[in-house]
Length: 236
Image: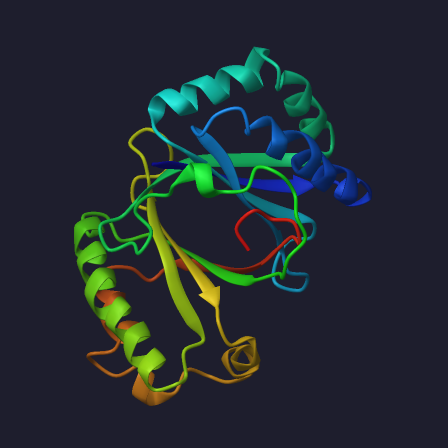
């Protein structure tokens, strides 16, 4: 499975029109086969980063499915959609992601992902993108797949789980920065965010043996952003 991760800097006045393009044209256009599905359409929450930023995730069965969809967007039946989407945004970046070994999500039955818009509850996600030190990519994966996953598990058992790890990705070869890790985490207890924002990390969470301490051996740069799913986003 491949996941195309796109970040769109949308023109403020065109925010609703841009969303409608994805909901009413791109989403149903993928219903003709089970090779591709739009998974998520998410807004970066106001106050947590650049204005009018949208993230979309599109899953593809394999490289052949990616090639077929790319052809449709380049000069096929979706070329008009691609042109209209570009007219509603200032900038756009994309990367192709593959699941990491410790990712809870390894594959999806794309036939089971809705290809038509339906209203449902919204969800909040924390997307962490980390950049390991040179030569430390494999060491980062080992620590994240053990210490970080264990940290989240213990927090869940203790009833203080702010986040649930749903997926972990890295760019496919030639399709993004190699030394980059993307953690896709559902915010399960939004009420705990105020403590995260308003207080320093407690000393006991920065001691040796903790993720906040030990991960510094393999990276010290990462970016977090809060993303809110649209009410119609296929996977809330």
